[in-house]
Amino acid sequence: MNNPADRWLQMLAVAGDEPSGDSPLSRYFRNSYDLPAEWSRVRRRYLGMINTHTARFNSPELSMARAPGRVNLIGEHTDYNGLPVFPMAVNRDMASVFSPRSDRKVVIVNTEPGFAERTFDIEESIPPHPTGDWGNYCKAAVQGLLDYYRQKHRGAERFCGFEATIDGDIPIAAGMSSSSALVVLCALIFLASNGLDLHTTPEGRLELADLLGGAERYVGTQGGGMDQAISLMGMAGHAVKIDFFPLRTRTAPLPANHTIVVADSTVKAAKTADALDKYNRRPIECRLAAAVLKRIFSERYGREVPISLLGDLKEEKLAVAESEIWRIAAAALHEDPYTLGEIAGVLGQSGEKTTALYCKRRDGSIFPKPSDGFKLQQRYRHVVEEGGRVEQSVRALEGGDITGFGELMNRSHQSCRDLYEISCPELDRLVEISREAGALGSRLTGAGFGGCTVSLVENKRLESFIQRVVQNYYRDYLGREDREFGTLIFPCQAAGGADIFVVA
Ligand code: NG1
Image (cartoon, rainbow, N blue to C red; front, side, top):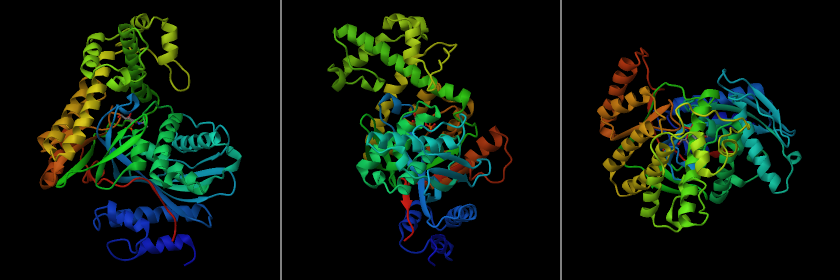
């Protein structure tokens, strides 16, 4: 049994209800899945990857890696505003069997036939595939790491590529971060293939999360760094509060006797073309709100105040008491949507300059003015109140106030729906049904515009909760006649952060 593939297969193929031995991979399976119930599914996945990989490549070395998806329990669209989020990494992931190559080629194969094989070369500046192509997430990770190491005086020519077979069981375009998990996975594969160890210490992981948060913008989104951070910093049995600028994490144990249930609205929330614009409108409106508030605070105090994000509106930054900050800010922004001309007037600059500074897509093209105007007050209110709800949620969980935490989740959904306008009728209905079915709290999770909800449910009600949601949402509201709903509504366990497993 000297062949690594055989050794992996041996570990996975053993008879019985659990993986054998004490390897890190076996330990991961035991800590993160409800074994033995899930073992045959998990085992089938990993065996599938090994078989696909050995059939496609003739690699002498073979390692494994995984990067989890996440559900955000509360704190939506706060990350890119410099305010905290409170997600947990889940036991659904992007996993891979991979081998380093001796040349500079990267070849990625997906077990899902809809994602065709992608190949590219490691070079100083890697040209992207068309928007929406799955290969871009891998390119984003590699480009991000190349840029990072270039600053550390190591040119692209020194790096070797890899070949990887990738398999995911995170629902796609559902707000569970399958895309960032793929970015993190490819980053780990690149590091391992090049003998680099950035991911091996907690400080290194934070640095990696930080750089990958920026690197993912390669695909065209202007998101924050939550997804990459939780995928790297997740902890089994815990939710993780993440603060930004600088990136920091703090874990909080999830309540015993309760389960986090994810339900897919089935409305696709893919970030391509139109959907990307819907998503990117929010960061643009937030940057404009921050610019307007900076101007108003600076004028009032006769000095330039350091506000570039809404999250900068705090006592430490402005040297102004918090209550005073909220009073001034609340009076400064009006409820009616702003026109570009009005914003430019407040900022004391031309409309062209305002557009050039704040309203650009990543590719440099101009973001079209929204026909219903820029909703600065509503976006501002959601973001700062949501940041406050994150702090309250951590305290509620730490103090054992589970009902209070559920209520905060409900209030968060309301704000996402009414102020940030990222919900849709299906998500609203699913949340309503989930509460009627006994959830202590239920809300949309992730970017919104479709995707999943997350609900907090007492274990003793779990079965009846799932049955009622299946009946009232999937069967009655959506009119679906599926026999099995396990891929649409499922309990999640909080899993540990991304890992690499080498054969013993
Ligand atoms: P998802 O749900 O993965 O599309 C996006 C952003 C997050 C965060 C949330 C909203 C990316 C990669 N992810 O998440 O950073 O802003 O929306 O809270 O852009």
